[in-house]
Amino acid sequence: MALATMLLAAAPASAAPVVSTITVSSFFPDPVEPFTTTGGVLCDSGTALTDFDHFGGGPRAGTFHLTKTLTCDDGSGTFTIRVEAKVIFGAPTDNGGWAVMGGTGDYENLHGGGSIVGTYVFDPDGIIDVYTGIVMN
Image: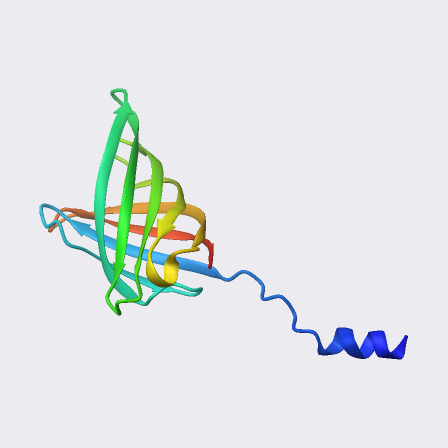
């Protein structure tokens, strides 16, 4: 029994998932979308490229669906996320969810996802998207 207790005490504990935040700034019509991250296993910064899939909705609200490929400034790789969000026209924010679709380099085995809140800004026109969630390699 004492040996089992000593072995358990010496075994490394599993790391608890860490909440990561990705902040992407998009200003129209500039196609360059800088991003920064905090927490977790992601690089500190880079640029994002958005590929819009489709937008649907009615006269008061809608949903948008897109993928975003994020390329790290440090050369560690890229990762792609799928985003699905809703917007009420005239509201100051939109919100929805996101999930990792894949990656290259250090992010080849990346998986996870979370929620997104986008805040519209003016002068210049754009949006600041904050993605919060759990990502693991």
